[in-house]
Image 1 (tube, rainbow over the protein chains, first blue to last red):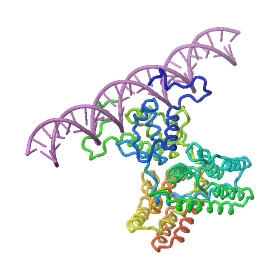
Image 2: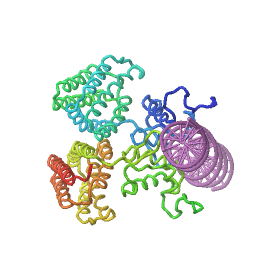
Image 3: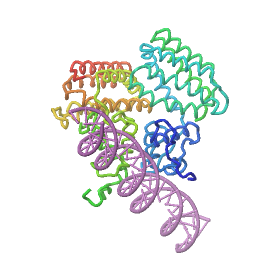
Image 4: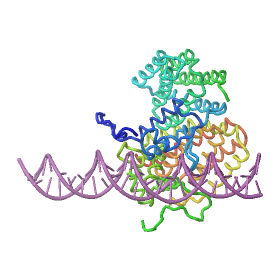
Length: 232
Length: 232
DNA sequence: ATGCCCCAAATCCTATAGGAACGCGGGCCA
DNA sequence: TGGCCCGCGTTCCTATAGGATTTGGGGCAT
């Protein structure tokens, strides 16, 4: 609004020309994750356009992509809304889906592990251990990112583009639940040791053991979340 | 181009106002399935807009959604292209993914089957048996639709929105492979009996048996496709 | 007081215009 | 004859404008 050329690409940047829609996508994703866009809230197209200081067209494209991830929902010709809060049933379904997919990924990833992949997994677990775990979002954000990265890496190491795509349809929801369903990080020590167990199984080269440890982890996550019982 | 109001909604239609982007999405999907848009071909945005007699904006939105299904790919700022033909490795990965997901769906669907769902499954198998199976696409199209519907119904009956979403990321690819990877319908009799076996297991109410029959089916599909060995 | 109607603001949706970059072919020069 | 440069067309990308519809509120009649 105030600046004369707000949407112009920064001249000094290397190659990331254009991609205005991509930037909008990233911004909306971050706002969704931050909680700045709360579940159930309306996401007006040109409202977001004004806020981000771009025209509605890139916003429309970004929302069309975002819709397919389940983060926002489109209501015919009434606009977009942020997906509602997870119910207890939603959570149960999500964990059931994770139990169906992630152990398979772990088994395959273990069998097809590369040195680079293993190194990245070690780094993710290390980041989990060293990440700050304060009470505000900004503080435990890196913890959540390391958590998500660990599972994402396993899915990638399974070397199956379709399983990776299938996992990614869950990944965003998992991340979203971590933010809105949970109450901060209350189980870091246990979660870290479970992740470590999965990693150990990976390093030992036993796919069945890796799968079993992953089952353990997801089931215990489910148990702890039900114990916390955030809301309904 | 020639008509004065080309994009106007047909006045007599019941309620399907707007949704121009949805129509574009359906049209592009159909063209992709028909083979009118061949793998590897470029999909120009305003080319499609001219062809469909709409403005580029709805085409852009439809392509953004389509990208997330894997049917088309976006190359930064070079436009969209139809996804390349399946390689043998792609096929192996797709079948591996199906083997990871579909038996789980079958097990859950069996346990949670509703009378309506069972009726729909019976109808799908019936459609499979009665569908024409000629050599042209138009002739075996209804056969393919019934096949896809059978698997889709099982995923839906599993009553897990996330597993359904995960399956749907595969469903389009499966359908696409049926068209471009195969050579018409050469295994109808065997495929029908395998589907019937899954259905029988569902009706008997034995989830483990249903899952096993689904494993059988997918593995045999894989075996027959490898035997056909379309190309590389 | 309550219900109905009309108007206005906001919103979605599509079309059109213009700016920038990439690819390609022809012409020019060594 | 071969290589280089330049101009043209195509395409993507964003902004702006206008038409159509829904939503909310105020005023009026009963």
